[in-house]
Amino acid sequence: QEIVPLFDIVMNDIAMGIVQQDESLRQQYFSPESVESSMARLQVRTFNLREVKTMRGLDPSDVDHLISVKGMVTHVSSILPDLKQACFKSGRMEDT
Image: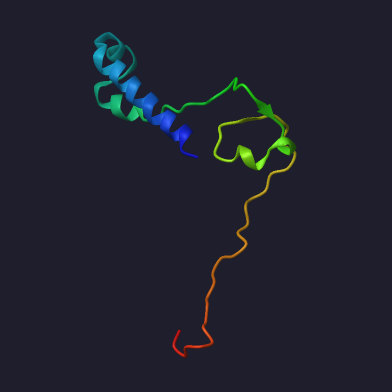
């Protein structure tokens, strides 16, 4: 969950440092006011990971690991929560 956003942060820091150090690069690609906003849009996308799994081949041991999943999307739906609101009333206490 945290590794890909961490890649994004590190990549943005590295790119910002390169652009700030290289005056010709900054003039070529950015206007003076757009350097900060343009650099924030960089996102890291991983590919060519060592192990590729199918959806059915996923195991509980794969949780919290960066894996590559191969397959075809055949159906898409929204996620419906099991529980939206709950209330607990104690039988022992009258005002709880």
